[in-house]
Image 1 (cartoon, rainbow, N blue to C red):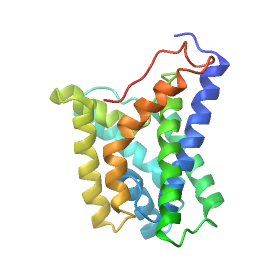
Image 2: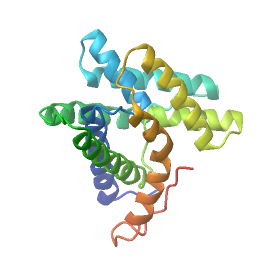
Image 3: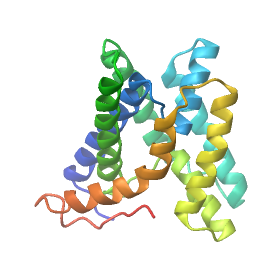
Image 4: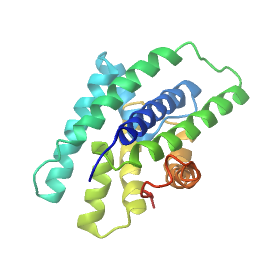
Length: 208
């Protein structure tokens, strides 16, 4: 597939928006995504940089999806893992002064975070460049089990939520909201983005 500068710009903007959204979900104190909660919990418990944890977990995700498929590992997905690790580390530092105190403030911050996560995912997936290794696990589960992508994602999120709870990660009501509504939110964001003249000629990418 022929690439142009626009593909890479959308890809990078999407990753920056997505990682900003992830960082804000934690700051909202209402609960981060299940996989993100594992990353934050491990970084806290092991006292190491979050970006290192994200990258190591990406390697583990590649190993898992390789075992599930019984084929060669897709190391190209590490490109996205690298950018997301750096982006998340950067935004965690930037948004650290944001500490919502009231429930309404937390809801506002969390709502902004969800919008950013959905829009960021829609943008970074649109050019169909390498996806994150975590997303590739979901696809591999779907391929070998004949489950729908949405069902496989829900199953994986449920397992990750249990692990995050055991690690005392930032799990909350927001985690359930993210698990259930990010997929439809990405589809809506994709539909709206396709109305823009510089995006509408790209092929749509839908999360079921």
